[in-house]
Image 1 (cartoon, rainbow, N blue to C red):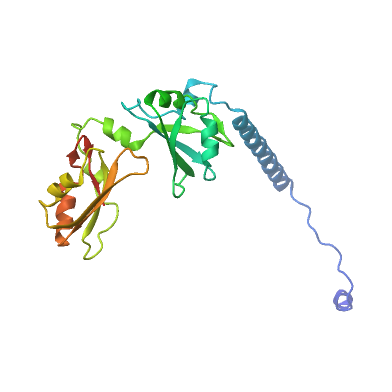
Image 2 (image 1 turned 90 degrees about the vertical axis):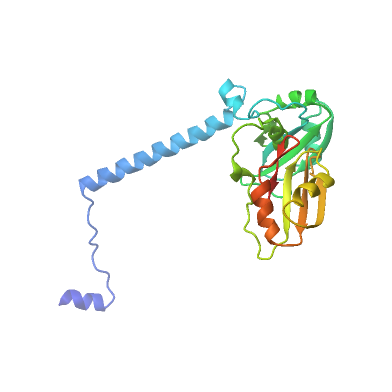
Length: 250
């Protein structure tokens, strides 16, 4: 009763803090040591990555080199990944001892891992020299280099088994849609040849081809009079071989 009176009068009750048990103290101590070891190992791993050099072993260097042999006549390389969109000046400076750069085509938007670009050189011999820069720093990033995709497509064995999914539309058809996009076309393809092909599946109202930004292939659009012709075009011409390249439709 006297304790209740003192509490109601505003006096502070005596401390009732319990002393931790020996087992819980040991448990917390072990957990603290484990976290300290984890932090030390993590910081050591980060430091080790900072000191890593692509020239240290052949296996490390391979992670930055092109996949496969250079296709005959290839003058364009893919290059990535960048945290920010690279400037043309920085790319020309990176390859200033390699050979003449003809065009530089940065991506219009970043990919899943960052920005990338395509660089076209005056000859395949210069491409061979440029590939030697794989793994070197450009700014804060080590450069991964590969040969341009269309050049690799051109070098593939056209008689290999066809994986038609690679060439099928990536988007759902719009109801009543009359137009298809056509890509991965050889430089030798003409609008006359394309019209001749697509008129087999329906009346063509419009057909237009353009050079791609790397100028190593073509793409275009075909508009049909009848929406049903779109399905027939997709069924017949996805993966269709024309002048050594397989056609892609969307």
